[in-house]
Length: 496
Image (cartoon, rainbow, N blue to C red; front, side, top):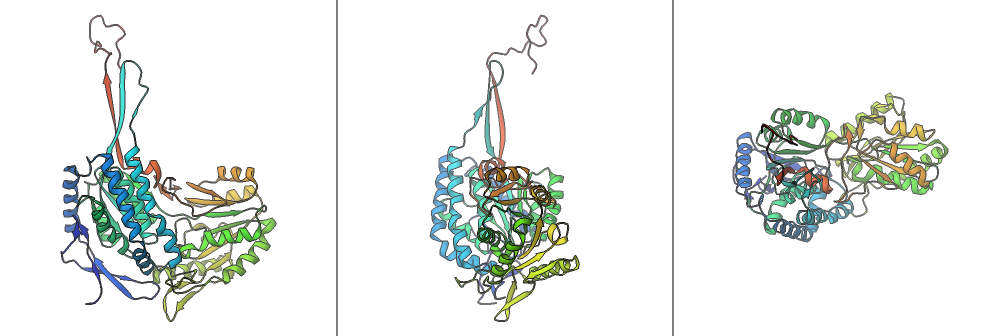
């Protein structure tokens, strides 16, 4: 332990020197200990919220000019770009995802800072068409101290998405990254400090979600909670937030259908399904975990899909040739295995994969797995968060839409067809917050991201995310409506 790096909380502009219990961070591909972080207790969380409130109220950031916020966020984007090689290696080590994925994903993350910097600089209030000799201005101001609970599957991406929107709007932020992959997020403190962000505007805490996360979210002084996680975490947090009337944005996962129609070239359709299904070893909220294939092309598609899946290269995430990396933990391997076992009990047909894998005797890996199953099976309806994919035959458009909409989730979906009219017809009927036509996983800082039903509420990205971090004030200036209501001979008195 003496040679293992310890990364303490980032609080008020420096890594804290307070002594706390420690949490070990494990490389899921090698099972090696790569660092430790603080397990932050309740008393420290309370102190950090108090300090954050003071930082917000002093106005250094909350009252800063839009041009100042623009400059700091833009500078942070450039600093982040210069640090990407180191962050790519760190992200690969703590998540087990292939380094080729991390290079591609992280190269775009600074765009979120650029986008929200520009939005901070250009966002305008408005004047409403208020009736009569009255001017009504509508302005946005920061909420206050906001809590952000971020996950392990895209640590840096999701944290940056949330942080960029909240800072652009002028808030003070307390981030609690997942205890399984927090190291890249903890690096952001110094990056923003170097960019000119006032100390204490961004706080980053280590700790278990069930403890530190709960201590943070039950604090009534918060102005907002922004969560990416599972439905169980949401239910625990939402109860606390409701008691304190704290608004929540929540992205809670999905069971994305990949809808493949006969007009698609089979080879292109298989490439699409592989990409949708197995990026990040299936550990994304929009993983194409249900491949819905029209009966006209079903047999040919399945034969080619199975053949291609069997060739995917599982291996060391640091190797550029690796296509499938690790899952996050031993528990994740066990979860995948349970879904495979249940799928067999439900009558599913194993097409390929289905088992755990070790690389040089180590690591948490699971084979890319395809299971032919019914639309009402456990595998087809519940989120695996791993490389275990349900293949479902559909007889018609109506059948495919019905299956696509048959789960409690409604985050993402993709429609693959060369029939323009069909594409729009199907997309309109699918219940999902994000519908791709001939694409999947495509994301942009300007594009709203969020789902319906049990996939959550509110949006990341875009104007919607920025405005969710603001409170709206309506200023009504009367320059001609006299207060004559209780005059004895009032005429044309106005009440509303």
